[in-house]
Image (tube, rainbow, N blue to C red; front, top):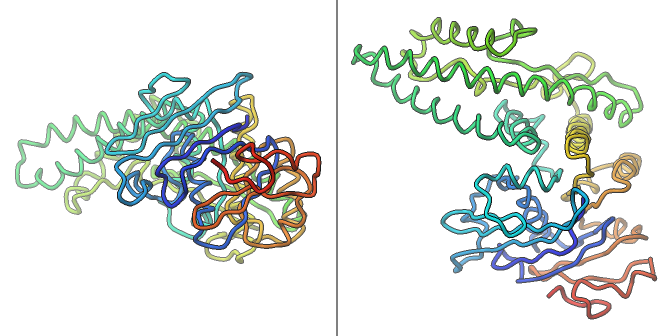
Length: 389
C-alpha cells in the first residue's frame, strides 16, 4: 500500500499543496513548529480515524477558513484508489468518488500505523490511553467494532443519566433493567473482540520486544477486564450473562455514585517487564521500547488482515532512539512506504534512497538526496528544489 499523490487545502498551517511521494522512504525535515506533524496527521486522517493528537476536526482547518480538504491517490488492494475528506461543520468522506457512510470503510481500504512521542502515553498514562490505543487499532481492521463502541457509549451515557434520577424516582427502575440488558449484550461483543485482538498483539509484541531488547527482558501483556479473570473461556452469551449479573450486583453502588462501575469503559491493558509494571517501574528507554513493540505489532496485524503492507508514519521518533534501535526499526519497515519527520541533520545525511523534503512555515519543498538517479523527481514535477504545488 502506498500514497502516490496528496493534495491539501486549508489544512492547519500547511500551504495549499499537491505532492507526489516515494513508494519507499519519505523524510520530512524541519525545525519544530513548521508543520511536520501536521503533514503526518493529514495522512493519518485518510484511515478515517480522528487526529492522533486528540484535536477536533474544527482545529484542523486553517484559521479564518470554513473548510479544509485532504485528497489522496493511493495504490492498495492491487489497484489504484482515491480518498477525499472534507473537514467542516461535519466531516464528509468519499472512497473512489463514492460517499462513505462510516469512517470504518476508509480504514478497510487504507491502512496506516502512526508512531509519535504522544503515544508514550500508552505506557505512561492511565487506562483510558490504553483503551484508546486498542479501540483505534481494532477499529482499523473491524468496521463493526466502531459501531459497537458507538452504540455502547450511547447506552452508557443514557444509563448514567438515569442513575442520577432513579433513587428519587423508583418507577424508573424497570427502565434501568432494560438498559442493563442492552449494555450487557454490547459489552460482551466488545470484550470478545478486544480479547481476541490482545492475544494476537501479545504474541507479536513479545517477539518484537525480545528483538529490540536483545532478549534481556521478558515482555508481557494481559487484558484486565472489569469482570476479572473469570472471563477466560466465556463465549458471547455467557459473557453477556456475566455482565448482566455484575451490573445487577453493582446497581446499588452505581446509584449512590451515579456512574456505571462495570463494563468495557473500565478495562485496562497491563504491560509488564520481568513481571513488573512497565508504567510504574520501567525506565524511559524501556517504556519507549514497549510502545515501539506495540506499534510494530499493530502494523503486523494490520498487514495480515489487509493482506497488504500499511503505510508507516514515524513522527519525530528516530531522534529518541539509539543507533541500534533506529537500525532495527528501519529494518522492520523495509518494503513499506514510510514517512519520517525529523529535526536532526544526521538522519537527513544518512538518507540514500527515497525522497527528502524540507518544511518551513508550512511550505513543503523537495530537496536532492544522495540517490542521483531519483534527483530529477520533484514534488511539483518541475525539477530540483521545486515547491510542492
